[in-house]
Length: 139
Image (cartoon, rainbow, N blue to C red; front, side):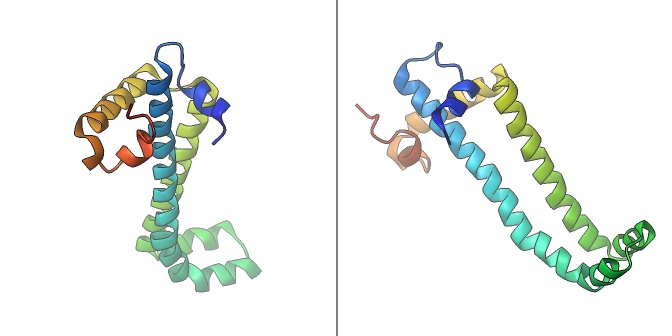
């Protein structure tokens, strides 16, 4: 992720440079974690749902009607639920990240990141995120 994105999301004037760099790394990991969750859901639940709907989707590719789509989704409720979860979480992450890029992080989320970073620092090298957040900044 380019540095200008991260600096526009978290204002640097309030922090010392090392703390700001660690806060940006933690936010970067949070963004990656959310996208990995979305990708994992699409690979597992989304693909299983699409496989379940495959015969209906093949028919709809030849003779598409909105009614056909509606009935395909209505007669496969688990597949519809799986696709709804995948699409809903994808849209939620897109909106969250777009808001962060356009408006910056809200003060509440910055405070939450600060608390999380404090917890990582207190726990030290035994914390899972220590290696990625505090690398090279121990001094």
